[in-house]
Image 1 (cartoon, one colour):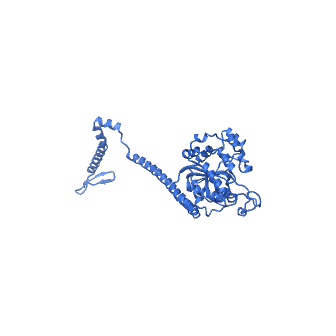
Image 2: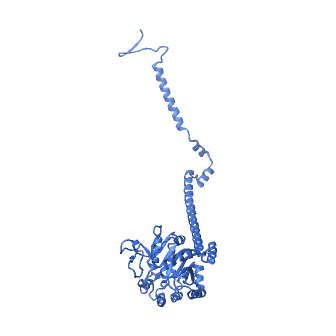
Image 3: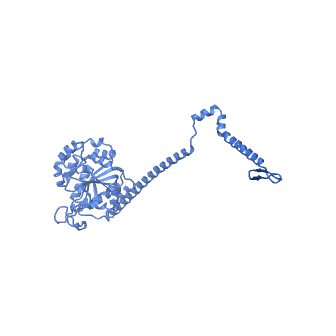
Length: 408
């Protein structure tokens, strides 16, 4: 028996069907070195791009330094962001253009309705209204000075102070886009003495806007509605202003005040107040429909005082279009405020539109805060305005040349 004994363990010699320990050991060692050699050659192989760059001529490298390769991914992201901003800008412009178009169509509809209603009474008015639909002058604002047949002296006091006359009035319209007119209707007897006197006054001054409306103090809410409808049909303005004929105005300050709110779509500007609802009969400003405002002693909702206020184009259009269904209270300023309840309207309380007469407006002017409008609260206008308008103008006016040096 052949065998080799290592301790207590016996190892048999390999036969024809087996592999010797020596052969297995050599095979493992050879496989290890072969693996190391392959891995080493793989890691040591040069980067083809690097080799290519190293073999390129010097001129190519210089040109690459002058014109570096741009990361396409980053460039694409930048271009995409720029495209988005551009699309947002163009979309905003399209929306603004559409909004203006809709507003223009609404005003044309308002003018058509006004012409239709008034045309039933006068074919001439209907024809004029149709012609106005074709083209309305684009202006900054229309200021309507509400006046009456008995107020000739008040109108003259305004003409002699803060309201330009003749060629200057035309220049104001052309250069500044400011339309100023005394607003008046007709008497209960059309063609009578009162109407002929107004016709003669208009022929001389050319500064009146005649309404298809029967004059009367208790019809001020109706007159205000018709004024806005008529003004919207005649002029395409950014703002429409209502002023009483016993108020002093600084036109430059009014223009500057309105210009600050020009970008807002629905603006209601004035001196906002909330006075008591007067239920007692026989008192001034009595409210016959006091019961609608709750318990006795309640106050009105916030609204602009009636001496002067301004509304933007959209609101004037709204009043004009819905004139037939808007409720009218006894007091015109309350009526206007009620028409905007429930609408998305920006109420602007601007106290420069309700300064007192001297010395109040004078002190403010000296302090560098000139007033846009001045009147006496105790008289709801300038007390004895026909006699005092010149004094107020001298002491509180912005200067006759101010309007021409003011840019809006």
